[in-house]
Image (cartoon, rainbow, N blue to C red; front, top):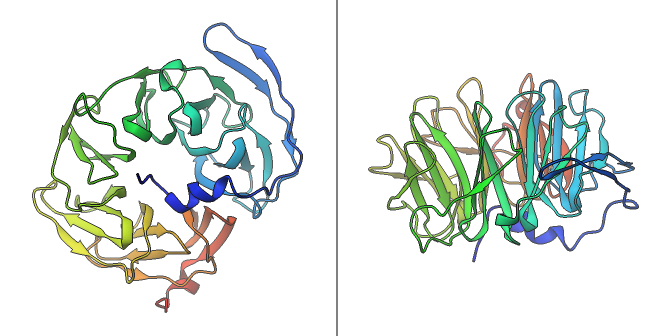
Length: 330
């Protein structure tokens, strides 16, 4: 069975790149959370596997292997490492605003922050069981969806303080969910084994025919309103009629694509294994491979301004200038 970011997730257990484990002084709070005073660890940002990075106001927060959280307050020039109240790998982080955020990970791990990532609280949700969280999306007004392996689907309406698990699509659904994204007035869900579903409210999901019979690892909506999904073996599909019909595209080779984002000017970046990075300047109708100084998997790209980007992935943190990467990759 496949899951999102397959190479990135597989190598997490094989690497030991951190210094000594930090210690945590837990203060059990009422309810199902425990507040921890963070222990900062001497972690080099380019020597730790990171699987996501997101802004919390002007701060950047990255998460990755063995519960490591990296924080930068100067645009990614310097980083401070700390451990979340878990030793499980954190696969994704999302912020509702500059203060309230949630990180999710392996073993049903959920941690949350109410101060922009300075401190984190472990959220105990027995309903997750041992299944892994693979992603999360903030929908506004404190509503967050978290999802992952074997059909795991969780919803919070209070910025991650409490959660409810729901069986979606049908009673037998047990495929890994790779990503959920907002598409105009709808929500789109993609995953392994041709999993593709659409919802009007993010709660009730209708299975649709997938344009690809293999696993999809992500999707997005272009500035022009087209749906774009991508996944194994570099497959990309684009629809201008909300998934009724699809056009198959290529990003130059068969390296698996695991993430993507729409830039403020409408350009689209796609990211993947083995340093894969491609860009579109025509609303996702075509993609040009980029030559970047990263040979390992790229999990996420965060804009820094002036066409410069912060990349996180198997090699930790790296910066890339699109002007220097604009020559086609060979």
